[in-house]
Length: 107
Image (tube, rainbow, N blue to C red; front, side, top):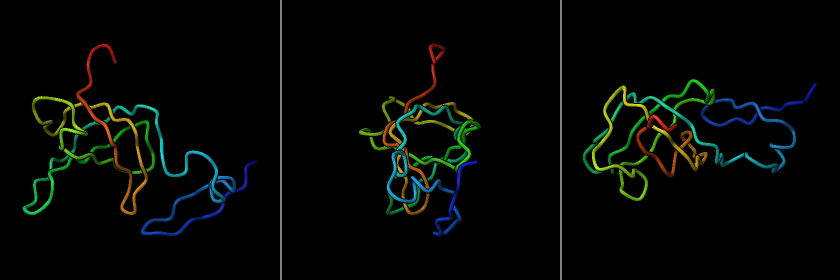
């Protein structure tokens, strides 16, 4: 059985000992993740962003910016839109995708 330790932040996150000591995939995940848009947030004074959840991703929600460098579509997603997110990065407040697009039949 693999040993684990707990890293404390805003939420307790279980890590293997290798991850806790700087192993791979601690702060970045490159596997594409299919998610469902839950909210599109447009707060004044902040860049618009999207909150998603994914059944295959058990580490909480994933957000991404609607900045054209991140969101590669001509129109914005809506709640219940299916999206593909890549280049996930762990941030202080959770996971952020650095690239996102609508899910297509080819996915």
